[in-house]
Length: 163
Image (cartoon, rainbow, N blue to C red):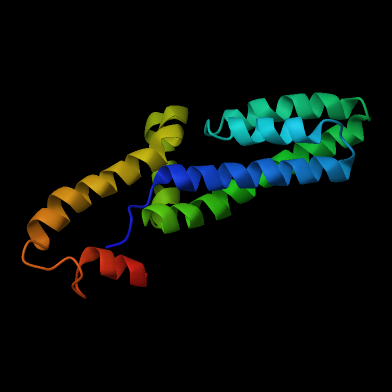
């Protein structure tokens, strides 16, 4: 049996991507304090949707010291990094770490965003991941696979590894 996969590892990897990418982008644009700003972006990426906005404010203000065009480029940098992280990297990473399909991730964000607003968007991925674990433990493992061995070819874990 393989070790349990976690959402914490997935979130850490996406946070690391954001911090490093923002730091490199700001260095290319010539913004001072790139390590500090990259670290702030890394830390605040833990707070979904609001954290990246808060992290961008100091960088944009520092960019205004260079000029309005530089501030616009920094804003675009943060937007692009967040879009890549939210729409490409996070679904892929969560598929690998939680075995959560990217379609399910994006669909849950849209559905809960419509139903519950910003709080629904923030809580979508953790709720769906928790729901998947509950379904797996209570229904699949206890009911459907009660007569299967853990290393069986037809077990849930072995099928998920082939996906």
